[in-house]
Image (cartoon, rainbow, N blue to C red; front, side, top):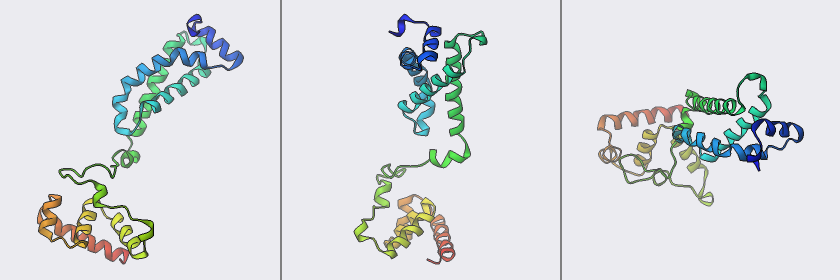
Length: 192
């Protein structure tokens, strides 16, 4: 159906009855093609293809609202430039220092580097029926530590010797002692 109309006829029809389906059908392959080109940049930020397609559809809607034939450019050209800018802006916003924590977040299902152990095995899930206040304090304190310090704290709590901890987390003995000292300081600060 959309092949029977050119862009200007479709824009006129949208202005008359606010029906965007024809325009969406016409531009969906183009949006998909451009989004596939940009997808490699978004894989680090947790975006899926559907998220990027939504950015494309929103940009198409905005382009229909903002486009005027006085621009001396085709609607197609106007939209392609607008979509590429929208995707570039989204990349730029996700590279900020503020979003660094979210972009570097690690799933508990991932393996700890250089081991065959997942984070979930190191920090097991606590059953609500087995939960008590002491365990709550323990979990709160452990979560307030850096990852390496939390691993060291957990292993010390479970009775591992320092040499074995150093082998498991691949740190030398000095760093283990430094971690223990940092844990003690944090204990004093939090009165744990």
